[in-house]
Image 1 (cartoon, one colour):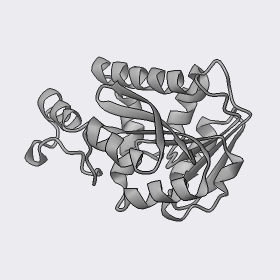
Image 2 (cartoon, rainbow, N blue to C red; image 1 turned 60 degrees about the horizontal axis):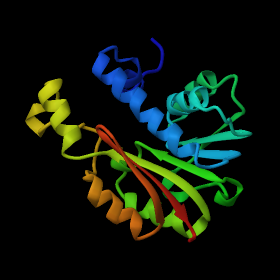
Image 3 (cartoon, helix red, strand yellow; image 1 turned 30 degrees about the vertical axis):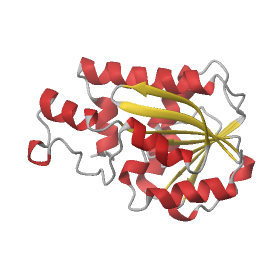
Length: 203
């Protein structure tokens, strides 16, 4: 049996509601990226590269290089296959102790990552200290995300719809307040059920 994960399952889900939400999410990310002229893009917690695949395919202005960092070796192997025709480099590393010099990039993507981390604030602080440039962050918008899982899909009802891999939960307002402590926020979009934020590190 081939490699799989909850993230892979999400992208393979055939329910029209899920597919429409994912398409809306990546439209939102693409619109935010269109405000920039990014040539070298780093995706933190890139997993299997499925988000970069969507971003690459949907972007009219493609970057010169894409990098993806993740701790999961199996996921990174899949990312190399998924992004086989993309100028992509997979990096095995921990977002809590980034093994790359961030200044070589002009855009950092942190999509659907922070809710999974034991210390998300530490990662945010690390980026703000080491980097001057643009970032796009996204997290589930709570409690809308959990209500959708519980009421529409009848998932994790015992845990009020919480995804078993999510350790952190932010409303759109709470997430903006967190990021504003470290970055200049340029644009906030609510792509149901996610909050997507474009911000600038270093002023």
